[in-house]
Length: 599
Image (tube, rainbow, N blue to C red; front, side, top):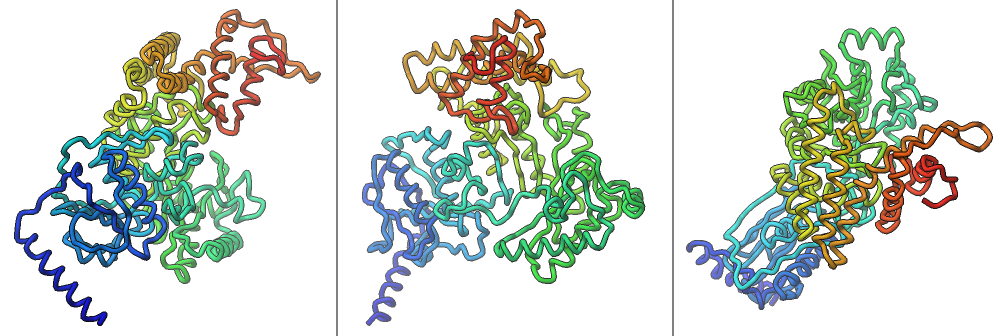
């Protein structure tokens, strides 16, 4: 009886589908889906079930229709198929995802059906977010602000059949917002935010970081001798142990410790490095040897190493093994000019290194410094280069990007920068300036104009005021970025104007005030620097240098800065620096206050 019913059902499918393919395909009117439903498989994984729920929720907000989620169907049209299933495969929009990567996706819209499916575990979820953005206009601006426009009386989409394979296998934009609110990071297609399988989990690829300090006991603060066979054996054993603990690992770290020039200078290492015209010579020979051993038991695991400081330049004669990854660190790249800009001499060394590595390695990662290490709240004019840099990386065989950003929450324009950077990491073909203006318009409403003008001025003046500098650091004080009194005054006026335009709208006022943190930090910076350089007298007191009268005038701004920090949950001043600890103490000293006195 069961076989007979199945046969009849199959005949009905064939009868229904064949005429549709004989005619010109039609799109779908998203405004006329009153009796549609959402179809998922009985064995759908957690992220696919969640993808269906996300589609249901945001489609409901856009259309006013809450489509039911079902596992069985009684007709062959008016369905949104989400995730792979036999039912999807049999439909007129059917396809298989058997050969899809973990994040590959496909969207088909035609003739009374919609299909969104992808590889496991994240492809279907990312496909839903792609559909919501591209066909409904949904914008995941912040964790608590999602823009969902109404569909209106008619919106015809399709016919469409599109596939997408993200160009970057690893995307980690490290703003604190993505860690504290992993759902937001996932909606922006960051694959490093959470282990939660409902949200697609974390990619099995790890970021390449310093590792010798834990693989070779006693090597912290220096580098081990890479010509010593005992060191090689220690590292191989450490890697094997790690792979036992991480059976799903796709890569492991075998990389130098931090430090600028503390490489081994023994006779053998020195001879190798001189022959290869790079200190990467002895390092890559060592890493290749580890890779040769690990490939015997783990042929699909990559060995990743850093090209960092003294090891940035590729060796003259040695190439990485096929199972070796290179993680190139973007030092000393200028934060103000695109890496691919031939007019920026500061970036020339990195450009040459990336081009050389891309010729000999097909698995390159980038560690990009997308922050001011010393001061997370200070205006940082680094937005104009993000789009160009990510495209430049992809064009040079880069498959993994670690955009090191402030790890604290509510840092300088972190909501805006997180949105723009994450979207570009997912799709480098998007326009960075358009994304920026879109966020400003949607998030700040009537108050967007002055903020946009201030950001444009900040970036323009940074390039003008630093043009004669031979080298611009990605961390440091305001004048390093060309922020002078004129830029600060313009910022104060811009945020005052923005608050005026926000009027009585408390939500907009709160967003504008949060964004204004950066300009108050710029005003208070000299006081912070003064207190930071105060000398301890050994008796519990600090020096009694005369207070600069000009610093006293900045005290109300510093008071407002820390008030806004409390309101908006700011928790870090810079790397390893608590906003409520040393930073406040330094500023109090500049105003002649005791550590326990309020501002």
